Length: 349
Image 1 (cartoon, rainbow, N blue to C red):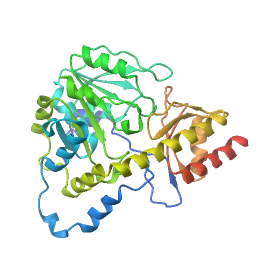
Image 2 (cartoon, rainbow, N blue to C red):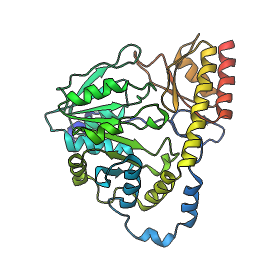
Image 3 (cartoon, helix red, strand yellow):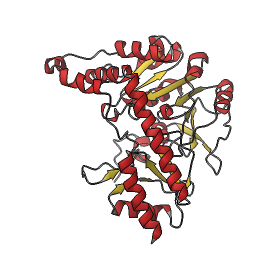
Image 4 (cartoon, one colour):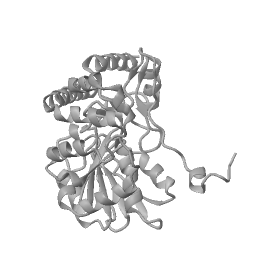
């Protein structure tokens, strides 16, 4: 039943649908791209040393200490960084700061399904660019959109677009290009230097995946100072809580643990890819912490349901473009062995 008190754009839109969450400990969650390993031990120390009395105080509204640490990591000024309540908040700020009401928001399809939702919230038109049949790059119209999102590596396909293609588009685009690099720590290339050298490019990053910190909801954006200043004007006053800021600093400074954990995820990713290919499954060349898999011998939706019956959650995206595939998060070696054993049993029947 429609309620005229709700804004028209909100009444007619479809909201973002997150991956299924479960509290059942026997269910193996390979559907939300969470890191299977705990965060740095330094994170645990921060939480153990946390004073309850500190929670009565407001947090630093501009995350000074964390921004200085991130600036050192990326070789830029802290003034070129804004920290957000997850990279999703940062994406929304980009759209609100850089797109006029009569302009378009651009993105590839398939890609991150939050983009059209963000556009619909603001009642903005979209410019959707279908990828090739094998989910490869298609050169967008560089003059069409006031803001163009490029998820790289892309989700849900796990593929990374070639650096020269991305850079060429950024250089000729008339609007702002947002390089959404939520998964880039698992990839061989990145575009951070484009955000530090071009006037129309920003890069967003997340601590959810590669730092094992999905629970604190922290992301950030790096880019030209004028664009970052515009985003500061419209962000919530205290958008990142104090505990998240302290935890993030601890995780970012522990580079040894970060590298070792990444290496483990990458090794497992390659091993599982080879095992699925040995079963004659098609597996995209992943640059992420998940696999984009096309099964052999049965429809993807059937494999999705059969795995679910075996207490293993994966992610299925219905539709003519994505419906032949499953997205599977890379878990621990033991978790992935369980997955492979179940799949082997299913395909053998």
